[in-house]
Image (cartoon, rainbow, N blue to C red; front, top):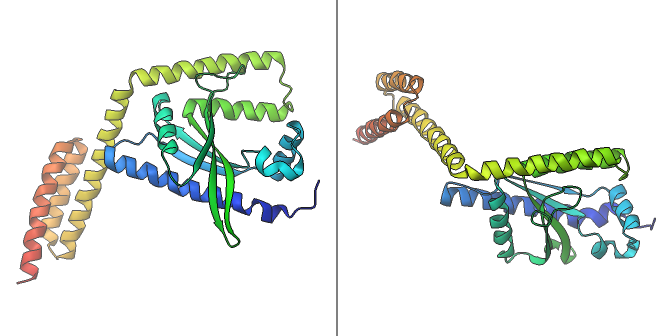
Length: 267
């Protein structure tokens, strides 16, 4: 092992992971605000452990003084999607970004590995602004469905247990599990529209409920206690009946009451 200060060596990678996570989470929020649907379910990230870096360098015959270029996934970002089509949409959004450079891509969904592994990888070069100036850092962005990620997590754990020498019967069962996960993704994609509409309905319901409860609290602020209490009773009844349309109408009534309260407060 060389005598480098690994803590300092990994600092730019840690910064890259944190910045990319923030940017991709912001992308998710923007897409949801614009389209009421985000192809990104959630984003995670990690910096590879020193032991894992050294093990991979040994396995790939990468000299330690070439680790920065030879090991491309020291900084790793993982993006989870609900549907396979979402993966390709997210990949295209990343290609279009101006704050990173796409080095190359690996489509393990169309061309899945013999083990059954499926995922979409983008190797990117991301410029980190450090106290010593700009430093380009390689990072791997993996895009998967939840089913693909579940399978990959199990495979990783088994490979760790067997030190990458999986027994043949375990490999076969993993291949069958990968096929089952793929069938699940295909089935979910076939009813995608219904799933998305149901999620949007739930989101809309959550927003209107939150809005109404806040509006009732505002009436208390204007000392319209009796009026606020009556609205609360009506809301409770509509909530019990699961009447979202009625709650929307109630919100309009409360807003009118708030307008009156605001005007009277300024007279």
